[in-house]
Image 1 (tube, helix red, strand yellow):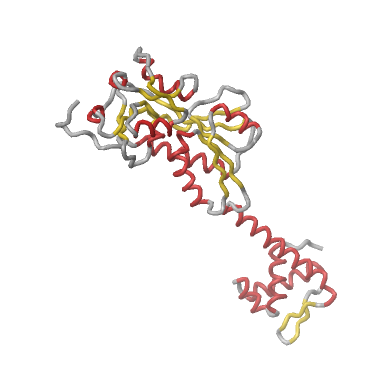
Image 2 (cartoon, rainbow, N blue to C red; image 1 turned 135 degrees about the vertical axis):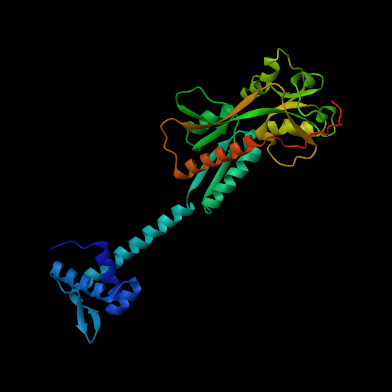
Length: 313
């Protein structure tokens, strides 16, 4: 005796539901002779009769009722399986927990997550904003799958992959005298009140590199903790600053002028994961969306209109 295949189960159920070979063929969108042959082959190979033929109708025989009950169970399980696959495709009943540095979360994260939402409309996304010192616990305790940071981490328990290399830029208030310059030097910034981040912070050290590389000692008139704070203080006319381009990647930022730095200065965006942890397909897709949006921000040559040729500076 041979075992039933899923195709045979499908045909048996269709005949049970339709009561005729023609009706079953219509349900399955196949030819009637093919259904008739498969039913005959199934009965012959099993050595049992499944249907009684009466005036063109196929009536399930009582002794095969247990078989028919099992056929229904198999189909219910297949429907559950298909529903589970459909839910997985849309991201239903799954929580994607991820985290970002504040500088990347402000604009880049929203763009990346918008693309993720389009691909997985029912995926629940838990986005956390972390400082670098919070990253290790977040990953090792598996509170989230990955973290996007502007600094790598030297720890064997964490894997670091560079997503993109970005630039540091100068930011000044709208209407400021330095806004007339197409390119701003850190020497220009030294003549103004500088807003910065403590150099004991890894992000703050990165922002200080252009000054240090030029042999300068930046004198901060005030300090903030996050990129958003620095940007807000500059926009309100309280000073000038150096910031990463991802933190000011919005097309329209009233009150703020962004200019390339004369001195080359870069900053990397990294994805950090727990060593040995297999990311979900949702997380892998999201990492690629972050990479794409970071590269798009990096590819923009200029954010604000260049000063006119008649401008000062």
